[in-house]
Image (cartoon, rainbow, N blue to C red; front, side):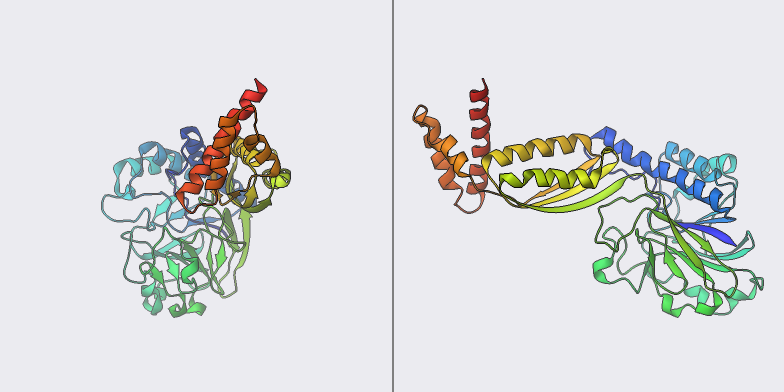
Amino acid sequence: MKLLHTADWQLGRPYARIEDPDKRARARAARFEALDALVAIAREEAVSLVLVAGDVFDAPTVDKATVSRACRALGAFQVPVVLLPGNHDHAGAGSVWHQRFFEAERADLAPNVHVVLAPGVLELAGASIFACPLQRRAESFDTTAWLRDGEALAAAPAGQPRLVLAHGATQLFGAGERDPEGPQASNFIDLGRLPTEAYDYVALGDWHGTKQVGPKAWYAGTHEPDRFPRGEAYDAGNALVVEVARGTPPAVQARKTARLRWHALAHAVHGDAELPALEAAVGALLGEEVDCHLLTLTLTGSLGVAGMAQLETLITRLEARLVRLELDQQLTLQPSPEDLARLCERPDDPTIAAVAQTLVAQLAQPGAEAETARLALLELHRLVSLAEEG
């Protein structure tokens, strides 16, 4: 059989770090737009089953519009879909899964959806699905522990694929890889204690990058990235198309689903003459369509006063165009000879010259005094430029 494995949709995510409300709405909408890509892949690949391994919603309770939109998207798959509560949308009392509005919308818009609120086995689409939902945000025990003995397998039909569906962190993640928003000691899944030969595929959620963590175990990752990349190995924005049969290794193919593009760029500049290279590097990374990009930009090196002013113009443009710009500006101000001559050698304007000379001397001071001097020099440069242009 062929199935689609996806996870960590976190519909309703607020994106609080995006200040502009229109851009924040754009990011929230992208999570739903990526569902259209999932539906298209499911139809193209003619899958007979969809597994969502936790965190369909960003919180245990979400607004009614998000519920309705999610149910409409789920109904579009037109094949059985299994939803597993995760740590963000656990199955505890009062969560969205127990609310009458969700059940009514699911029945009306997505009758193909099966929500697993307790550990158990589902027989769907010619497969046995061993579901391990989270009953609360942080479980102190391994939710897959019940699969270690023979009782769980006794009722499973012989010959059809056996699928494990779970949400949590595995032993193969080092401390540096752990999701900072996810559980650490809780929601731990010990893959090493599962009888590998008894199951044909383990569909996991919680880690937001696509990752194989065992011979038959995969994290699909989030369908729409929600944070900047953490190295080349962090591959988010996918779903997994899985071909599986009883007693044979699964064939897994990653398919891209993301709508937004998250980038990390570190660039060093040493003098004003290198600013065009920075602008070219940013342009090459983003291309012509910038309204679907988010960028974390780390700048090191030094610039003169005029260069700093040009950089501020570039940053202003990027902030206006991108969905989000996160700037780590580690540049030092080193006035060029031209800067010094323009600001400090002004026989016709001794006041500005004296102020500029004082500020240049303060640049060598430690701490806040140097930062104040840097900002003041930039403002002085701006005022002088405006006067000369006028």
